[in-house]
Length: 204
Image 1 (cartoon, helix red, strand yellow):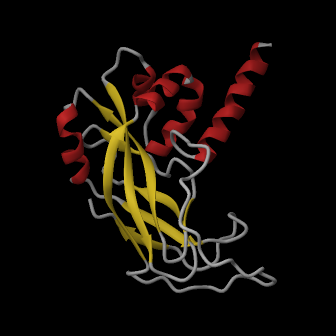
Image 2 (tube, rainbow, N blue to C red):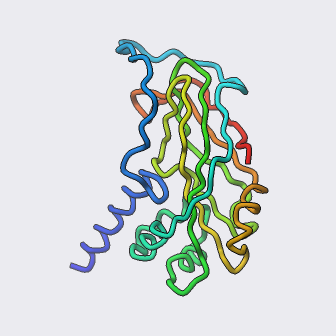
């Protein structure tokens, strides 16, 4: 019986990770775009450029409800912690209720100048942990689609060690980090995106 409970917890954890850190059910609605033609062949490959996708800081909001969820589901978070680049010792501190860890949501403004949809698949944060801040490696929705010639607000969960960074210094410290997004064309089959992978720096 105990083994079944643990197995069920691990399955739930894998689903949570695939959806994204502090996952949300559905993305915010975006402005309507022209209907897509039905694809009857392999999607056209598009060459990446430095101007097709742009991302910048929009806002930093409280993520207390996400932190509560993490602390109520330790097994799930032990898996999701890998998306923050955390080791098991740090992950255990996050879910310890008396710890100084806090949670925030970093909202990025992402704009797509192309006439086809683009998908942000990975958030790259090489400075994770250096200043008491860990940024999740994916958005709260997992893969994040940005409509053709559209702009969307992409939420990313951030964990902060309050013993290292004071609450009034979180935004300033976060803005000093290096952050970039890895993206591809949006494909009908998420496992086989069309086009080359591109990377852009986030203007914080």
